[in-house]
Amino acid sequence: MKTTATKHKSSRERILQTAVVLFARQGFDRTGLRELAREACVNLAMINYFFGSKKKLLTEILDVFFAGYLQVITTELSGDDSLPTKFERFIVNAVDFFDSNRDFLVVAITDLHQDDPEITEHKAHWGNRIMAVIKKEVCLPLARETGQEIPPTLIAPLLTSMMASRYLFSPVVVKIESESPGVPDLQQHTAFITSLFLGGIKGLGVMDGTGSAATQSPQGSTGE
Amino acid sequence: MKTTATKHKSSRERILQTAVVLFARQGFDRTGLRELAREACVNLAMINYFFGSKKKLLTEILDVFFAGYLQVITTELSGDDSLPTKFERFIVNAVDFFDSNRDFLVVAITDLHQDDPEITEHKAHWGNRIMAVIKKEVCLPLARETGQEIPPTLIAPLLTSMMASRYLFSPVVVKIESESPGVPDLQQHTAFITSLFLGGIKGLGVMDGTGSAATQSPQGSTGE
DNA sequence: AAAAAAAACAAACGTTTGTTTAATATTTTG
DNA sequence: CAAAATATTAAACAAACGTTTGTTTTTTTT
Image (cartoon, rainbow over all chains, first blue to last red; front, top):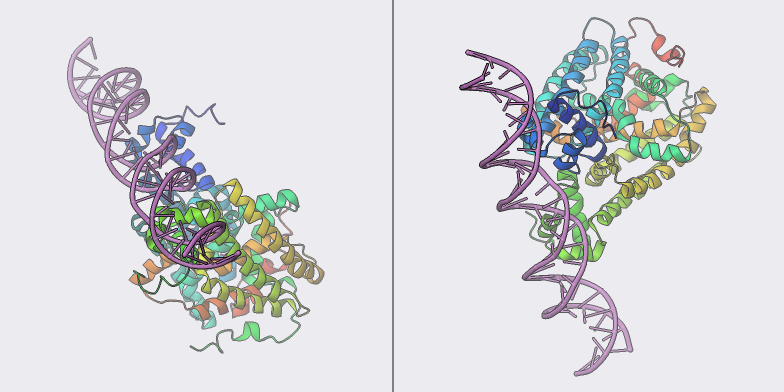
């Protein structure tokens, strides 16, 4: 495919960039080092020469993504603005970051679940740093304003999942849309998530036909 | 581990149940048929004898999950109730379904992205059926009440991601929480998602400090 | 009980996997 | 230019992969 104009970057960089694309498209395990070497136009042995192992190559990809994501989180969620303002800023920039680095995102998220101890450790390290920011900038203000104590381990995965949903399901969605179009563009995606996160579907103008017990005290009747 | 009381079910069922657990924990590709056979206490050849191939075994797992999920969707989102009422019912039941079938969920979602044509085709089939219901029961009423036309390919992945976030990130979250506890239980998870989806964080009682442009017309200023 | 069908088994099939080695080529440094 | 360091290469490694084979045991049917 991309046989032209790829020889200019260093072999190391070419391996990493190609790896992200292949890992995102086929998954980490489905991608063989020989295929990666062929696609990146390097010798097979160069991969382990530069990265030590296939796993180390993965962790380096994860580092690139999580470092960038953490930066967006800290930048947009810090400050003295109101929570809605900060959230709006954050969602716009985070979705934009996801969109610009969708392959990194997919690798980080979809291979996020499998429990290789070494990888999980690596992710937990980043997770802890993210949770710390979320707790300070989101959970504490939220508790101060509403009285509800939402743990960061609930809200951080939820927020990330919402913003990543577009890219998590994309291969299937693309196949569905090719049969019946109606593509939601990035602006609509961002706008809907922001609007939903701030005001819910009621904020969209949905009438509340029946009992309004939903938003009042949703956890009052669920004692263990 | 589970060497006792496993011999009673049929070999076929034992293979399938063990496969879901292993696929969810280690991923489809990381799980070898020999390991699966050992763990399920069957001969290696029995797997292909009953299921034809490893891939067919996966599609059968996907079928179990998507059939159940589609059932929850159709059951809870149909009817003449108001949208908030239907959503509240749906989220409670869907999260409950996810919780009872978390291994199926993880297999369906995490291996959702990789583009084996045969598997993607299979998922797109289920995706189409789900989208059809979402469009009829959610998107059309939403457009009628609010004027906004949200495509089902936006709202269905978003909703699913929100409800699945708890299980998507669980291995990392578990590791994080083991260091600093504060476990969000299922009730809190369900209640928060419901509350958030219906009323947003403003519905929780968050004060809108600055400009209120967020919920008003979030897509008004984002022309292509 | 005899015949037919289903289930279970051990063993091997040919590939592919990630990784390593040792030799060669290229570039950088003194 | 020589020496040292870095980059690249082809070839081989053992291990694991999914699948298939031929045979034997168990169950069901007649």
